Length: 125
Picture 1 (cartoon, rainbow, N blue to C red):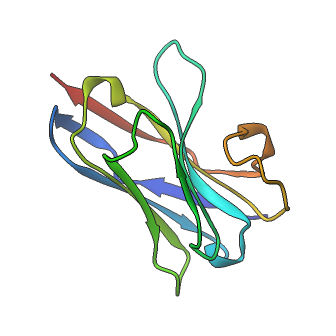
Picture 2: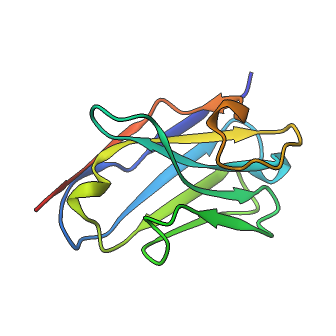
């Protein structure tokens, strides 16, 4: 059973930066896709950013493009989400997600088999 442990959340002010980490029990380079989703209070979980296991491609939600960057330590088991210019609207629980199976729909959360427990990000105005 693959386990994902996400961390790095916290309380920050608007305009600040924060880096989330997700450590997997297996090499992330072997996954087809690995990335981040988030769920704000009273809202459905939504796609944030994802990368292919080999790092060749990345995808971002329009709402975070230019502000967030997904990356990994290719030699190991950890991916990161560097978040900048944070806004109150970014407040949510952020979840790491991954899968090994081939499926090109990167934003479809039902296609991900492994999930972290979530880490809270709160952005104050």
